[in-house]
Image (cartoon, rainbow, N blue to C red; front, side, top):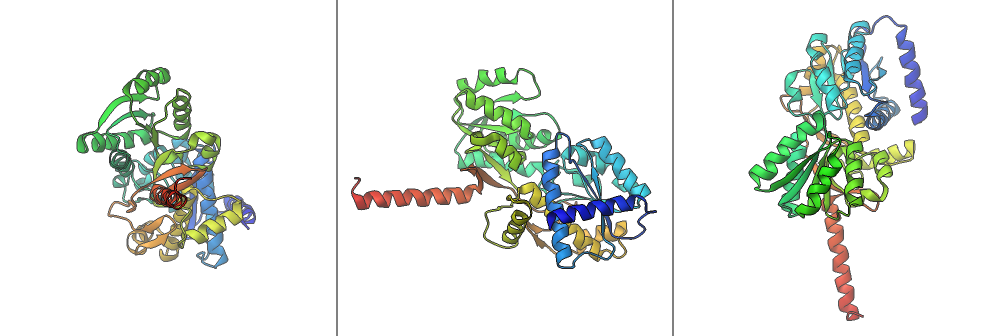
Length: 393
């Protein structure tokens, strides 16, 4: 079913190239980085988007005339903007799922009001971006919340008051690091022993100079997956045995497969999507995703699913699907719908009210830290009981 859907949507996109504008039809542009440095994330998001369309079609829930125009931004913010302009001017598109990365989202948000296009971002996390346009919405928590969650977790739950911070270049790290530092050092009284700048060519030497000497029991790695993998590989090779906390960007099936045993025990905050949950709508989503793709969904696939699922609801309500009606549907027509990523309710700025939770890689699986601790306690209790019964033999 999933493959057939992909062919169908591809054919629809090709046919729409020769049409003469979309008028007031419920047409949605999906601008994702299918290739380039963010291609891994775009691929996962797209898989969720396609499954949402398939589910809606199966229950006959698509609005009449609903169509999707797919665009590969190639992980290039300039291309994302130019393609958005093309969809708005040549195709009269009023609604897009776009801005998968913070860099693309920051470029896109600057032209939304000019073009009169509503944008729903599945995964952009730059702080304050939603305040720059009333037409921008997102269902991924702000980096401020991620940095805050990681700081509290390292200080309170891991009991680490001294850490080394590894920070990569770009908007993503720039959004997380200040809030982490503010929370960990200023609010909680922890000490950031050193900062290793991953944009510097000699960052490995800088790491070797501070991590063994400082004796820290935890490091915080801020960046995208390739940078995270480089740091983890390097410090493990150097014999570092402490805790490694990183960002939600680490959570990708491809990244985890590439990391292999190095991923074991890595900790990171994620939006409240737990694919091991035994509750609906998560269970049904995970089962359908696995049936369609033969693997479990990651957090990006889940947000792609909810982004399109929500878009379909909005385009059903907005009649006609023009800019102002679409914007009103987001703010007043949803009434806290329950998505697979949690309840979806936007604040006045278009930010979803989701708060990250901590997860851990254990035996090649991503599990919530709370569930992991509960399981470990139960295991230890069983071992103690067995010792009492056997007398320690």
